[in-house]
Length: 372
Image (cartoon, rainbow, N blue to C red; front, side):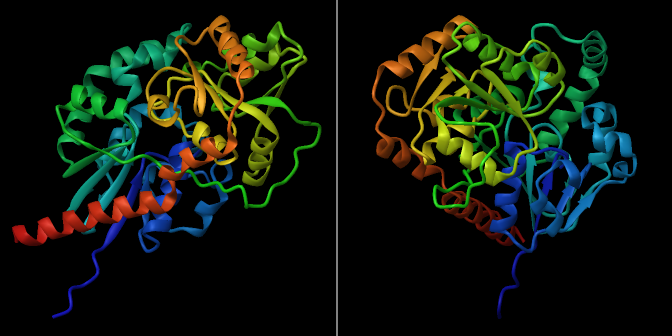
């Protein structure tokens, strides 16, 4: 008797932006091309265009236009939106940084975790040094209820995968659960087409980041403010954009809404990547490595897994302009071997990622079959 092909589905928190997690979801979709994607909110105009070609199934909350456009304002409504999603599948792969692990299914649930919810377990990092009072008060009021919901959601998973060593420890601390580390893939190649960005030359530092408080882009800008010979290109959008633009020095350029081909062009022309963010993983140093470019990154979280000190980049210990400036001095003081840097990216390919996911799914299907 021929065994039927298992039915796979993917769940993701919300598809409203162009971030690393959304790139991972696209890699999941390529690994399982027949899998529908369930989510709370979907705004095609502000996320990657590839999603328009996929079977996206948003919750009823998606009918509220302002929440699609400003998903952070949807926080009080997201638990109910997730609870409303019931997925009929043999295995659901939940791509989660705080919500999608709560979807309901009659099958097995494999959670790919970017981090337990930052706003619950790392609220000081999530809010930044100068938190907006309304946001801080709202989190304080909702946190006890959200923590209870979050832990129930985590306990409903069949198995957890962690994006990095740091997140593996955080899953254990928050939920008391073991997890397997499966690094996220990069999706770039030095052979892919590039598209130039007008007005940008060469030999600049590159910072690609959503403009949120915990990303510390302001500290990166301050690090180059006093050294006009160092040029910095910042790529990203977010709530901090207006503040950053208001005091931008002449040696810093801010860009947003670029194509992938333009991002690749920036990698090829850059001197190095700079990242001062509290990252659970940190994809940009891997993408830079594909092009043989080193990185200067914060000694924290996922960067500890993806950057090899003095081989593919340098670390700084705290996200201050002084520390970042010192890291750039050290980066410029030593030669870098592009071939060594490029070879370091080989363990983060999409083929390796897809193979890991397929192995996990097959194992869960086998276990479910044995339990019948």
